[in-house]
Image (cartoon, rainbow, N blue to C red; front, side, top):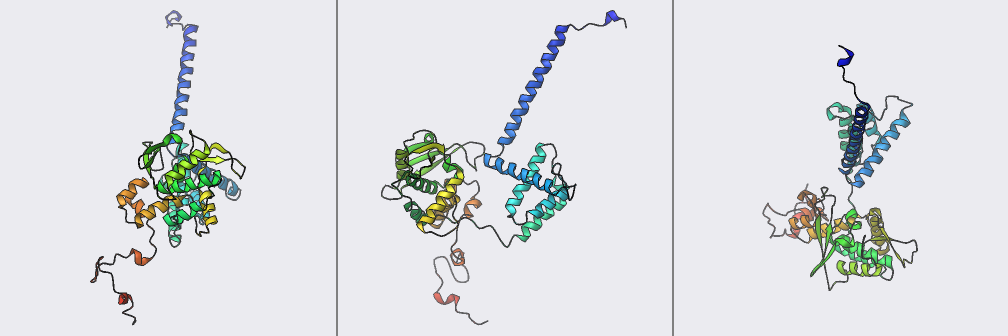
Length: 359
């Protein structure tokens, strides 16, 4: 082919092609950044933090033991490595071990090394064995701050101080709304709306609403009660002087608490408030932030409130979750007392349990 038959490319066209290439590279990089953000947003912030910590823990474990066994590599992790790691977590609850393994799986998937269950027979068996070994020691739920206990906790808060007013409102509102810790501290003034019978709280999102559809929670006023959550909240708001942003804010370092801050109270702080109130009230038990939510649900079930109503107020997606909150005081309380000549309307005679003492 003659040289004259070859079309020469003008320098301007080459420059334009390079510019187009750079633009495409920049566009693709922007798409990758959006994708990474969306992938991270597929889990709640708290879950992201836990998964990140779990992945770093696994990597550190591999690095620490690698001098003794070079095959212990975090990425990609082998079945032998993962099963050995599960063995190192024997002291933890099964649910915690499963979460940690899920974090490692997720890290591998995002880095292009999917961990298929069929390729992890030893790890799957180790998880099953760990669960069987721990089945005799089921996790104990936090003590429920039921209505009577909650009133004692609220009374232990000093209403003469800002911190006392804040904590009292936090306890009563947390109980009445069956709020999770993150929901409770996430309430902003803009989420509150007065009603003739109380207040409504608009939750933009929650644990059971990861897609952000939102939920509305009712706080019921008790005008004649000294433990009215609406009154406690209004008293705290008036004392804090804040009308925008977080309702429950951290207080400045002064223990006299004459000046409220503007920073949102953290979720772990809710647990400290509950524990401290229980200690001041002289109430024994393993209390935590979840005690408020558990207390309302348990109190409602014990009072005979229809499960569907409790489920709706607690924002549960499954009624079995609601049933799991029912705290039965004794085995006798849980017995339906039917059959063998008995019915729910016919209580057993006192002697029925002691009438057959012969072995």
